[in-house]
Every structure is written in structure tokens, then in C-alpha cells.
Image 1 (tube, helix red, strand yellow):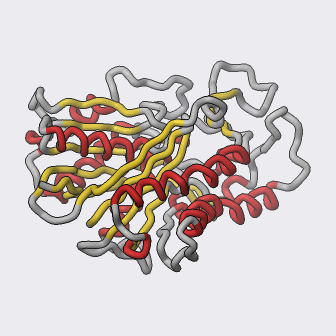
Image 2 (cartoon, helix red, strand yellow; image 1 turned 180 degrees about the horizontal axis):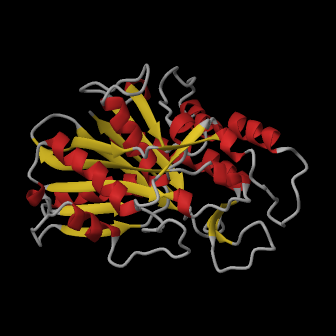
Image 3 (tube, one colour; image 1 turned 180 degrees about the vertical axis):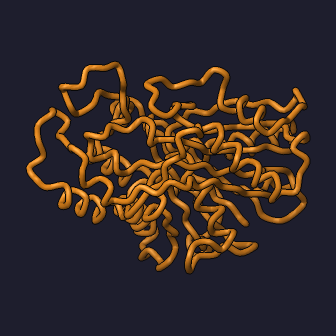
Length: 352
């Protein structure tokens, strides 16, 4: 028996927010002081570092649970399964349903329960729960589904990563340009087919790193409300990721017994183009190799950073032939890797 992804689906919101749309924002430093540069330069520097040209925002009437259900429907259809046969629905997110123009996150009931409701699944033995693990949440959900199936308590699991980060960004913070909305989903089940999940690795660094990503006040001190926004210490995250993610990836690959030369693709969380390239380059340096050309597919340029949704969305795009010059074929060994709030890291070695 092998445990494989048998269906994929994603939902990419229709609303496109281009870099030029930020030219009229009032960006401020974290202490509220003015940034001594015109927005055109701020945005140009942002593009050079992150690789982002545009990002997607959900339409006002849609919430995280809606996006998650749209991606799930596609994954169920792609896997050709009966949704009533699902044993688990695992939804990775970080902020719940935040309605448009609201200051409050809504997580009661859970996003997974809402998704099950939207999918109209009647079977009470289909258990839905939410997973909070920062940006690596979807990868961790896959690891958990694998454990459920391997232990014999489940046969089919639906794992979703969904987020509407556009609802929790500070318009006066330059970092707000990074974030986007979206959802990706997979069906995971036991199969007689070859391949599947071969090895995995997870870690939480919380002694000094727990609050590198946090909820904080707006950069504009004149605004007096109770709203909190996603904030981060970018330089600290960069240094942390560059040190620790390649090591976790190496541990995972070594555990799998597969040679680095057999890895066809590395699907890394679409956090920041320069950071992702530096991580994968460092990973190959651990094996005294140069990073192969085309090994790291990227979707961040057009889709931005949608947190838990980036990897499953990227995976779905490639399998459907929607990412130029990128493909994953049957028998290919690929790696999933992510880093995010917590600070959490994980990786998977997977054979298609």
C-alpha cells in the first residue's frame, strides 16, 4: 500500500491587484515616520526583492471557507471519488473567515466544518478540523493525513490550504504588498499504485523565533481602532529561513534514501522570490552541487504570497499544464518545503 495524492484543485481569485495600484498608498515606517522615497521607488524595490508583479484578492462576498470549498470541489472531481467516503477534511489556514471590511476573525464553527457544510457532505464520520501551523500548514496537513492512513484509521483525506490575507494587511505597511488570497486542495488516499509520500520532516523553533511573524497595530499612529494586522521582521525571517530550511530539507531527503540527483522539482512555499532561491541554492550547496536550472517552479510573480495556499496551488497549476516550461510526470521525485509563523518548517519527499 502506498499513500498518494490522487486529485488536486485550486481556486485563484479573479480580482487582480497590480503593483501600480499601490502607488497611491501612504506607506510609513513601523514607528509611524515617513519613508523618504516616492512610492514608485518603494514598489520598484519591492518587485526586485520579492519577484511579485501582481497578486489576487477575493471578491468582497467571498470568505476563506468559500475559497477552500471551491478548491475542494475541483480536487474531489479530479480524484473521481465519492465525497461521502472522505474520512477527514483538514483545512490549514491562519486567520479564519474575515469578512470584507470587518475587524474580527470568525473561526466558530471551524473552517473545516464550514467547508464540509458547503460541500453538502452528510456522513458524520467524515471529521473536519482546522490546522494552524503558519504558512507550512498545508504541508503539515498532508503529513497528518499520511499518518491517519498509515495507521489504518482513514482511507481518504481532503487536505486544503486557504487564506484571505488581503483582509488582514496594514495599508500603511510596505509588507502588505506581499500578501494575497487563494486556495489549494488535494485528495490523499491509500492506493496500490507505486510512489507516494516517502519521507517527511517538521520542526518548530519557538525559543527566540516564535514572534518573528505576529499581529500588530497599524503603522499610522493617528488611526485609533482595535484592528490588528499581520506583521513580520523580514530580515530575521530571511536569516532564519536561509539557515534552517535547507537543513530540514536535507534531513528529509537523506531519510528518504533518494539521491539529490533524482529530485526533479522543489515546490517551495511562495514567500519571496529571492529568499526562496537562496534557500534552494543553499540546499544544493549542502550536497556540493549547483542549483539545477528550472528545479524551482515559481507562481509568486502573478499570484503573490497566499500563505498555506501557495504550494497546493502551484502543484495544481503544474499538473494541469498551466505553468510555462514546468511539468511533473509520473514517477518524478519532488519535494515540498515551507517555512512560516511559529516559526515552523517542514518538508516532504514525494514520488509522483
